[in-house]
Length: 421
Ligand SMILES: Cc1ncc(COP(=O)(O)O)c(C=O)c1O
Image (cartoon, rainbow, N blue to C red; front, side, top):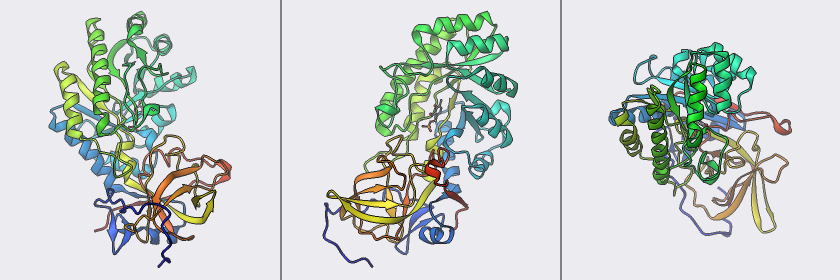
């Protein structure tokens, strides 16, 4: 074992909030899907994503279950941008036959994602499309795909109308209120954002649709991403504003049959972050949308996959600089941009002893030549040594789908595990 060093920070109890079936401590070591995490890293190399595929299914069933208990006519769609891996998509596809309540559809945001979903076995009617700043080239491809489009600008309504008069469309609205992990992840609010049609221009959008004989049958909004239990009131405020806009559209004769409330449900990243109570979420949806008799679309990305994978890396450098201890890993923000871009907190777990006392404060950094390439700062950490394997938790959403070869660092390999007892 490592020699005990003098603590450089307060001694903290090891965070164990993340333990669950499929991600736990066995014989004092981190185990994922029943397999020893460090051993997987030694065998396959690092950096390495390791997925517990059963967790993907569990997350989806939990969402579907809560919406069903609230009596909602629901359509759950996975926001594909969060994870493009065929093994993950196969789990969603396998959860229910098209049209059944347990089926998981797809939310796509680019022509490429539509093509991936179609290739993955989704029928066009199971795919909902919502995207911003679409080119005419995008529209030409999308309009041959047969998927339902939620248009997020009057310009899109005009251009779709000119190309495909008579089409049924959705409108992405901007409720002027938002919710997010932090302010920067709220997609609407007092500060104008690039998304959707605001209430003050709703009539113009309806007029444009009418001119082209387009029927507006869906309303979509996305309040923001990563919000947790304490974000529910903000989400409800956004929902309430969107519901008012639905009312205005109905008054103008639009046969709205689905309100899509977007995604944005977060997953806790640290001990002090409270998970969303899905039944409370579903109750809020039922309160505002139930009386309208519409189908309720939800399109979570991160929530369905985030905690279904870990990212394994090796500690390659431990060095004190200017009074800060830097723990350097053999991976960078090119494979894990969660803190770099989104500022999600990051839990890092020592695989050989996940429950080791956290005796020092460190900065965990990557191997990209940029100062911002860090994963955690002032972070309570156990005594570690170069060569140790650590797991970055919550690695299933956005990390792999947003990976790049920046600095010509390769993207990480991935293992997709069926859970062992
Ligand atoms: C329109 C829309 N729907 C769904 C999502 C998925 O968000 P999340 O992964 O936070 O659930 C996003 C994320 O940007 C989005 O823009």
